Amino acid sequence: MKKIVTVCLTTMMLLLAACGSLNEDGEIDKIIFAGGDWDSFQLHNSIAQTIIEEGYGYETEVKTGSTAAVFQGLRQGDIHVYMEAWTNTIKEIYEEGLESGDVVKVSVNFDDNQGGFHVPTYVIEGDEERGIEPYAPDLEYLEDLKNYPELFEDPEDPDKGIAYNGPSAWEISKTMEEKFKAYNLDETFNLISAGSQSALNASLESAYQKGEPWIGYTWSPTTPTAKHDLTLLKEDDYDEEIFDETRKTQLPPEDVDVAVHKDFPEQAPDVNEFLSNYHTSNDLTEAGIKYMYENDASAEEAAKWWLTEYEDVWIEWVDEEIADKVKEAL
Image (cartoon, rainbow, N blue to C red; front, side, top):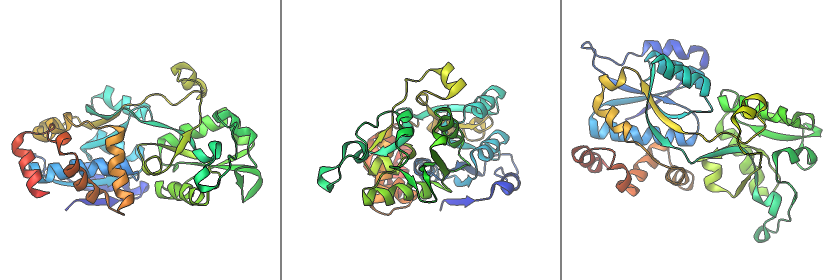
């Protein structure tokens, strides 16, 4: 059985250091995955873990914590595999890891994602079926938001609107806060950091069910974009120089890489070869996420469904013998 262990940031590295994953012969004993609290990360971990456990016979485990902590664990070798390295979101620490040689990119998991501040589409277009009139038909660009604080009124501070950001432990949340301030939206809005992805999703879900206005950060592929009709507020096309200086463009296009610790290719060459073939897409990922919320399923259950549903995809990642073992286990 897969184990998912959640630890506090303050004790993260101590616990990682205590969890040896090599046997007395220096061979890998258990493959440790980096973990996070968002759906796609958990789904891809479970897909890879199922294939590795059933096909290759390794034990696996997931270590979760802040982005910075788990990535440091990857650099140190206390974590072996990072299934969702959002290469621009963690650009600085990721590039440092690659340049130092501590981290090796083995494949691109998916690269057709999109992130930023979203509103339910009914806020702009209305929803005739639900009897919802457009709240803000002229809301198109993120900068336009400054004209609508009363529409998104903060119940704790009625003179301002409220917008939702990701958890403070996410690197992207810092970028979105900088972006918010760059447009001077902090003058008319309070940007609230959610305690977790589930809390962020819950704030949207509550508003969506009531047909009320909501503005917040989300991205695809994840539960909200798989489940609801959302509109990304526009910004100028991505420009690296402007973005790095002011954040006042769209988020950069982002490869989501599969990365491993530098020693992993020698410690588990068979698994490393499988991971080098691992490639999905936004739609393939959202299919698994959609299964999770529609069936109240765990990531592990969704992974088994996904491996059955998309057998033609993953059997290309492994040789026939491994594929047969996984199919038999499923």
